[in-house]
Every structure is written in C-alpha cells, then in structure tokens.
Amino acid sequence: MLRSGILFLLLVCSWTAFAEGGKPDGEALYTERCAMCHALGFLAPTVEQIRRLSVEQVEAAMWHGAMQEHANGLSRPERLAIARWLGNDSDVVRTPDPGVAVCKRTTAAGVQSAAWPGWSPDNRFDRHVADPTITPARVRGTQLQWAHPFPSHAAFSSSGNPVAVREGVVYTGNLNHFVYALDEASGCARWTFFAEGRVRSNVALAGDRLVFGDLMANVYALDAASGELRWRARADWTPGARITGNVTVHDGVAYVPVSSLEEVAAMKMDLPCCTFRGAVVAFDLRNGEVRWKTHTIDRYAEYLGTNAMGIDRFGPSGVPVWSGITVDAKRGLLYVGNGNQFTEPAVIESDAVMALDMQTGAKRWIKSLAPEQMGGQDIYHLACEAWWDPERKNCSPDNPAGHGDRDIGAPPALVTRTDGRDVIIAGSKDGMLYALDPDADGAIMWNLRVGRGGEMGGIEYGVATDGRYVYAPVVDMDADLSSDGSLTAVDLITGKAVWRVENIEAACAGKPTPPCGSAMLTPPTVAGGVVFAGLVDGTLRAYDAANGNEVWRFDTARDFTGVNGLKGNGGSLGNGGPVIVGNRIYVTSGFNILNTGIAGNVLLAFEIPR
Image 1: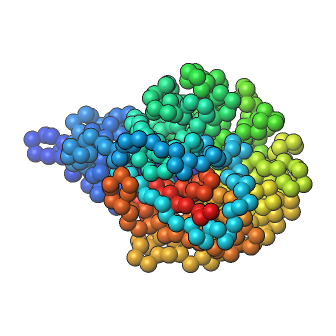
Image 2 (image 1 turned 60 degrees about the horizontal axis):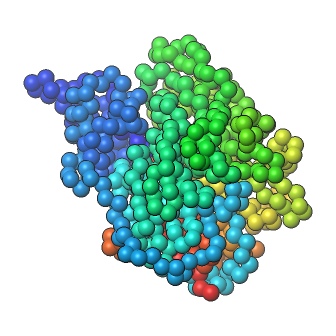
C-alpha cells in the first residue's frame, strides 16, 4: 500500500516557530518540523514540487485533505504561515487550466468499433484483446499519431492514469483534478470536468454514465457525452480515506474500492494509530445511493494499550483496497485484492483475495496469501521502517523485524483456460503468482515465484492473460530506487514458466538514474500475438507472446509538442498500462508518485499499421 500512503507527505508537525512580533514563521516551521521528510528526496515531495500548488491548496490539505491528521493542533495562523511559505501565489496556479484545445467539431474519422470501457476490455480483468490480426510483423511498424500534454498542478506531476475508450472518445483522469474526454481522431477535447480531489482512479463507462473516484474519497457519475455531473457521493468519511484503485461498473452498479493515508500517518510518532478499515462500496449507477458497503475488517478497531512512547494504539486496522473489483457474473461474485494490515490482531483478510456476493456484499470466501516467510501475516506501516525509526517504537509488536507491505495490489484476473476451466489469477508484491479455484473457495491450484518481492517489489498493478498464458510483470525496486524488472509468461494449466524476459537493459541515457531502471510497473496488455508492457525507464515495449522476443519499442520519456498546443514531456510508465482499441494504442506517460519514477504528464496515441 506504499504508493497510496505517501502521495502528499507534506508536513509532519509537532512544535511551533514564531517570527519577531509573535507571528508564525512559515520557513522556520518548515525547517524545524517538515524538512526531515522532504530532505529525503524520495517518498515525500520536495519544496520545489510543493510550490506547484497554490497557497489555498496547501492550506486546504491541512484542513480537510491529505494532511488533516498531521495538522491537528496547529492554529489557522500557523497553517496559513506554512501555506504562504510553501505555496505559489500566482494567478496561473490559483486558477488551474485544463490545457486543452476544444473540438470545433467532432469527426467519425478513424473511430474504432471496439471499446475499452474500464480497466480492461471487460470486467473479468484479463487485459486481453482477441484480435489475431495483431501480429509481431504488424506491430513493428507502429507509429506515434498524436500527443496530448497535460498541465501539472500537483506536487507529483502524474500517476500514469488509466485510459478508457469508447465510440471515438478517449477518457482519462489526472492528478491535476481534471477528467478529460478527447476525440480519438485528433486529440481535441469534447469536454473536461474539474473534481474536488485529485484523480488517480480509472474512469469506467456504462451506458450514458462515466464513473470515477478522487483522492478525497469522492465518487462522481458524469454524463459521458457532455461531462455534466449526474451525482456525487462520499465512499468513506474516515480521515485519510481515498480512492486510488479502479472503479468497476456492472449491471447498473458502480463498485468502488477504498484505500487510506493512515499507513503514512503512523510516521507521526505522537499520533494514535490506527482505526481505518478498507472497504468496497456499491453505488446505484442511476442516483448514487449506497446499495451496500463491506469493510475488509469486520469489527471496529479496539484499544490495544500504548506504545513505547505512551501513545495510544488501536486495532485491528488497515487492509485497504487499492486494486480493482473483478466481476464473475456466472457465479454472482466479485473478487477483491486486499492490502496489508496496519495494526494487530491479525485478520484473515490481510493480503487476501476476497469473494463478495455481488448483490449483498457478503463475504463468500477469503483466501489469505500473506507470505509464509512472515508467518502468514502482514502487519505493517511506514513507521516500521528502520530508516525512519531504528527502534520501530510505533510498529506492531507482532512485527519486530519491520517486514511487510506485500499487498495484493494487482486486480484479480478471471480467465477461462484452454481446457475450459475457470481460474482466478492473483499477483502479489511479494513476487508470487497464484492460480485460485473459484469453485473451491479460492483453493490454490498452483503458485510460482516470479520476483524477489518487497515493499516496492513483485507484481504491482496487474497482469494480462489470453487463456493460454498469464503475463506477469515484476518491479523489484530497492530502497535506493534501483530496479531489476522482468516479464514472465506462465502456462495457465501447469503453472510453469514458459519464457522470461530478464536482465533488461534500461534506456536511461540522459535520464535521472535512479529512478530510471528496468522495473515493470504497468499492467501489460496482450493483443493477438503480442504483449505490450511499460517500464520505469519510459519505454513502451512489445514482445512476441510465443517466445518473449522484443519486436518494437518506443521511448516515451522525451519532449512532445501536443495537439493542444502545449509542450510537455513523458516519463515513467505507471499504473495505467497500454490500452489497445482496434489499430490504436493509448498510454499515459509520466509517473513520479513518491518520486520513484520519472516525471511527465502526456497522453500518447499510436497507430498499428493495417
């Protein structure tokens, strides 16, 4: 859950600094109370990055945004002093612009009959395009068609947001608060929508509705044709709750995963920890009414006593959901991948795949995949890291070694194998790949280690499968941000590796290294006989699905002049993954969440020759 926990780690405050005359001194407050985080150079944004934000945005983060818990006890003058020293007071920053060229007219030229309406072409989340005409030979001639840079109005410029495509329109959200509907032929804007919170989730399309979530746990339904707001609701009111995972829409219901910042809040050593419980919320697509809400942990957190510093502790807590909600219409179930606990006692839902009843949200079965080498449990938050506190005073006593963060962040994939049998594929940050039996309460059919795993390792954002093989990308990034990524094709029936791309030579010349490296963050896509995958070095690469040979690549970490008239640049390829509709490939380039990737913020459209 590391990436959802640290997005806006702006302030860790405990004392007070005053300038002459008794007024709070913003710079002194920052130096005394905040520099310990921002001087790290990773995980937290630098002062320069924070200064992309307006004064109002910085102050708002302390009142009702990402930093509300950290700012408890600060007076308004103190918060305002910090905001004025850190924030940008220019009119450009105070009045964000979507940075688009509005369509003068729309055209049907080049419109594809196929669609990609959510995180995957369908809600089984296989990321498979069954088009046998997409061959390695064709893909070798793929060319860039247009680029659309987005203005960056966030400390971290981009999270590589997912893309959806339908009826000639390309939809995507952005950390700059905007959701975009762009004409697929020209890249001009059909409409834009400004959300209260920053947007990391996908956008999901069904009928005339488009649904997404933001980093303040708001859920929005828009008219897909006009961008007009139809309804808005709050998924969770717990401080720090947010939506970083992917929304799924099925049969008139929007299923929304809920994650949290509380994992980072534990770094503030005098803050009682922890009470958040992850959740899945089912909203009526017509009016936004909650049909049901299921927490990953059934019971409320209870008082556990105090830590070594005398600070109150509560538990169990955690188990956020930052992946996606997979639909099994045949069995009437939803499959959910869960994150780690924050505090004990241990619960079975941590690092697990849950099967929920689609109609009621009831838990039908739970399969824990918490690592055996950690005792089958994962109770962790960032204060467990020795680089933060060598004594781990605020870490769970059940985790004296401080290990953890082995979430199931990749949405489970439901796939029918070539022998006709359904299986659920789950990948973990521990570097493990599992095949689960949906007809035997998630019993493990086979498992295979495909990566070393770790807090920033293993499988992060998803896999792809075509019914014959599953294609598993691995990050395996170390604390110094160096990485050893790989891509493994695994036979779905035997669970054996068929081929593996490893020891990848990253394209890092002229790029910040690290974080530039070979880590494969993106969920891949398999189309016809080709697997498409993105790397932290910014390259989008295509591999022959039969043998893993590279057949094409494009370096997106470079400068672009956009169809909207803006200049911008790409960077690392992050959690969105390549989207393939007809002869087009779409991907958002730029991923510097936690400063673990190369900054950038541009949507790219490629054409596969006919």
